[in-house]
Image (cartoon, rainbow, N blue to C red):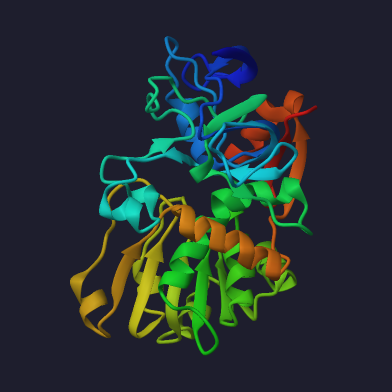
Length: 344
C-alpha cells in the first residue's frame, strides 16, 4: 500500500480539498496509471452532495493517464502507454453479463471507480481526482492516437453511455434519430449519431442551443417549447435518445416516434415517469433505458471515435479551479464538459 495525493469531499455538498488517499501496490494483473486528465460528470455532483464525513469521497470516473508500472502477468500494456479508465474497475467476471463483456450490468454489481465500497482486495475505491489509479488490466483501455487526450476523458462515461444504445438499437443510414438535450451527453450523442449515418435532429428548450446543434452537425433543430414545431415532428423518428437530466414530460417525445419507434432514456431525471399506456400502444412504441457500457462496448466506442475524429468539446480547468467548475456545472454553465488537468 502507498499514499497518493487526492481531492476529496469530507462532508455532504462540501468543497473538494487536498487529502491523502491510499492505493494498493500493483498486483500480478494490475496496471498503475499516473492520472493526467479527469472529466467532471453530473453524477459527481450527486455523489458529493451525499458525501459522508467519516469516509472522504474522491470523485472522478472519466480518466486518461500514463502507465507507470505493470504486474508480472500484464500483457496488454507497458509503461509509457496512454490509457483510459471509465466508471467500472472490476466485476465478478463470471455472470452472464460479465461473460458477454457487459460488466456494467454485473449480477453481483460492478466495482465502481469511486464510492462503490471496497474492491475485491478489501480496499475502498477512490476516483480520478487523484494522482494515480491502480486496477486490473481488464478494465483499462488504450487511448486512440490522433485525439486530444484531455477531450477523450469524457468519452469514458458520456461517450459510451450514448454510443451503446445507438449501436444496440441499430442506428445507421436510413434511421432518423432525435436527441433530447445538448449537454455533456447530448453533444456527443449528436456527433456519434451523425457519424453512424443517421438523420440527426436536436431537441432543445433554448434557441441558442438550437444554433449550436446545427453548428455541431445536426441536420435539424427543434424547440421543444414550441407547440407548432413539436406537432410537425409527429411520426418522424425511429429513435429518440433522451439525455436530459432535468424533470420533463415524455408524452411530447413519444408523439414524435414512428411506428415501432423507441424512446431511450440515458439521462437520469428524478422521480417516477408519467406515461399513459395509449402513448405506447398506439404505434407499438417502446420505452427503453441504457447506462454506461461494458468493456466490449467501451473499446468499440473508442475505436469508432478515433475513426471518425470524435471527442468531447471541453473546457480544461486546473485542480485549483475544480470547485468553481463544479459550481458552474450545477448551474449548467459549460459547453459541454469540464476536464481537470490533474498535473496542474
